[in-house]
Each structure stands twice: as structure tokens, then as C-alpha cells.
Amino acid sequence: MNSIELFLANFEASLAQDSFRKLTLGKFRGGLESVEHIYIRPVSLKNGRRLNFVHRYADRDLTQNYSLPDGISLVRNWLGKSSLAATLFTIDQRQQLLFNRRGEPRLSTSSEAPVELCPQHDRPKSHLLQDETFLRHLGVLEPAGNPKTRMGDKYRQIHHFIALLAPALRTEAGEWIADYVRLRFRAVKPAM
Image (cartoon, rainbow, N blue to C red; front, top):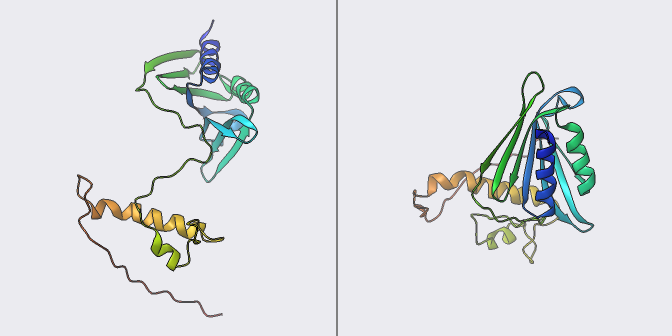
């Protein structure tokens, strides 16, 4: 069994054993040369288990979900032809398949620290801001605690801003060094 077939067999076995974390494809040529990377991870959707492909371009990401057989077939067709680098991450292993200038594959394997899988598509996010009651008063959140229609971007922006400020407002031990921060800004409505 050559390196490509062994890599694909390990990919399929990790899917069958539920140990697959992600697969990264890179070094593209041919029809995929404008793609920087393709990230593949398992997701559980309403219509079953799928492989989520994120095509990373320089200016955008394109996401597509495929059934397991279709996803495996795509990877099989790309390896060695369109993609000259692939890294498979499982719960306890990392395998890298690289092709040299002559197109000869080389497979290397290393162990990884065990990781718990979360195949849910809609994973809960951890936010630094625990008490969001003031966001209801600002009109960003509904009484139920979900962002209002058309306020999702503002909600994410507030959490991103807090994440950016957190290192300046915390000690290395994670303790807050400021009780509160008052920010002032001036908004000007453009003349029509």
C-alpha cells in the first residue's frame, strides 16, 4: 500500500471510529490554485453526519457540506493532483502527507495530546462578558437574551471589543485590574 492509500485508509478509519478531528489541505495547483487552504471537519446536521469543507481564499471563505462518501471522494481526487500537502488530525494522532517536486509522497506520523470532540455545528461560544443585562437596555438583546433582528453584528462587535481590551484590563493571573471602564464617543449622522 502506497503512502496516499495509507493516508486515505487512515482518514476513512478515523471517520468510522469517530476519532476524526480535522483535515487540512494545502499547496494547491491546477483548478484550485487560487485556494490557500481547505479545512475539513465533521459536523452533525439535521440530515445526519457531514463533512464541512471551508475553502479559504485570500479575500473570502466558502463553506460547503458534503456527505461522508462524497467528501472522501473529493479528497481522494485532490491528493497528489490538485493538493500537494495534507494533514490529518485525529483524537490522538497527526499524519502529514507531503509531495516533493517530482510528485513522490512522504507520509509522517506523530502523536497528539488527546482532545475531546464536539461535532455539533452550532457550538456554544465562551464570552468574557458574563452579565449582559445592560445589552437589553441598549436594545441589542431581546428579553429572552438573544440578539434582536439586525443586531447580531453589533452583539459580536461588542464581544470582540471586550476581547481586545481584556489583556490591557487583566493581570497575567486573569484578575481584572479595572472595576469598570467608561468609554466616550461621539456619533455624527452624515448630512443627507
